[in-house]
Length: 218
Image 1 (cartoon, one colour):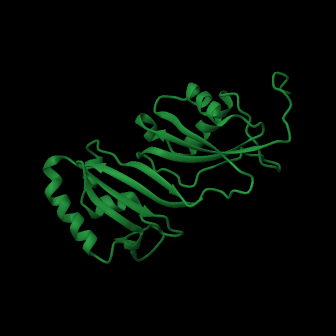
Image 2 (cartoon, helix red, strand yellow):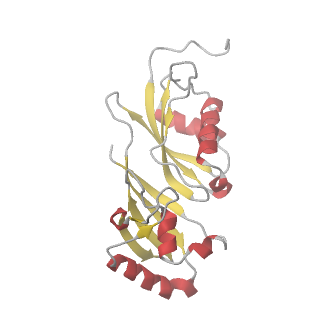
Image 3 (tube, one colour):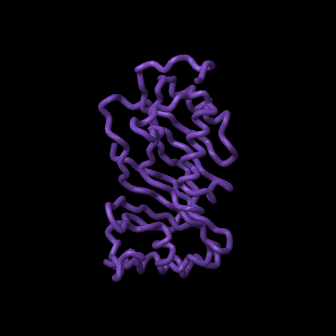
């Protein structure tokens, strides 16, 4: 069916990629991002390993989806190749085909016994205009001093306390910077923090969140 491709070997290779998602790519959904990355891998001449069954899917996984409108500086994706390739060459080939706003910064080969990436924590930052600095700093201190951070979810009748998920919160170089721990259910979302600080109106004015760090446990 594909005479231009050499036969696939039984070898396989797991890779972990770090990449940036910026600019207009902030406005594509996670599902569209996954499809775009799948096409990117194929255009780069790499052969994805597929799952078995009636509806095979490419072996690609993301430990954490990035919400719409948020930029990412160190996003993570894992994939499996049917034909092993040098990780440095993989990064070069992907970047040569990548659209504006997407750049692969690191490709790491994983050993056979290494488990899938598991999320530990995420760091976000949000720029704030100078005239809002004083009230925001006061809101930060109040939130840090509080033992509760109640958030509402559509599927829950009562608000949920997620204060324990907020590991750190600070003012840093004209921006709010905070770290959220991963949780299994009803986890704290970055926009929950903006709401608690009274900053949601700034997103409507063109300011946006950036996820600057994604920390893994493996």
